[in-house]
Amino acid sequence: MHRQRSRHGCGRHEMSRGRGHGRHRVRRGDVRSAILALLDDRPMHGYEMIQELEERTGGRWTPSAGSIYPTLQLLEDEGLVTPEEVDGRKVYSLTDAGGEAAPERAEAGRPWEQGDEDSPRFQARRELFQLMGAAKQLGRAADDEQLAKAAEILKDARRRLYGLLAEE
Image 1 (cartoon, rainbow, N blue to C red):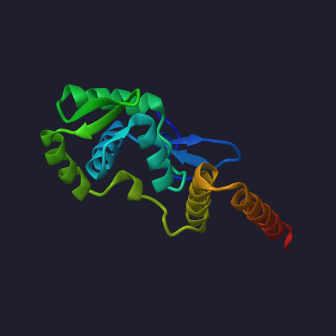
Image 2: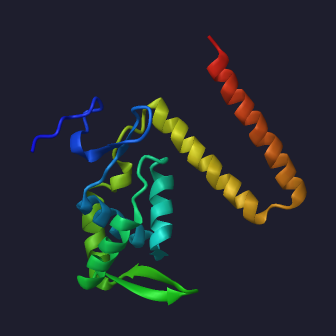
């Protein structure tokens, strides 16, 4: 069956999400490469990998649990990763064989580093996700006074963004 290419030129590797903006769908090999590269940085659990990839791509790529967990199981079956129970979660780390496989894949480039990094859309999304990360840290560590100041900063930022839309 022939699939039409989207106006973005990504064809079957794109999923539409509202108002014609696409979201990159990644091939299974890229998920595999991404997991190996992430675990080469440090051990993590599956949900943490999803969050990390979303942050590193400025929201362009949010792999689903349905792609991360089966890939982790496959990597475990291949002896490249090993899980360890930590605080009720499976935290995965690379085995020696996985450590050898990770650099090979990293040489080809990390999957989250590919794309349209120079576009204003990507830069704005990256800043948004970095802002959300900062807000999450404030939510966990700030006192009431800091949270009140943060709310004012966020309110001002929202007003200024809407102001941009109101400009001619």
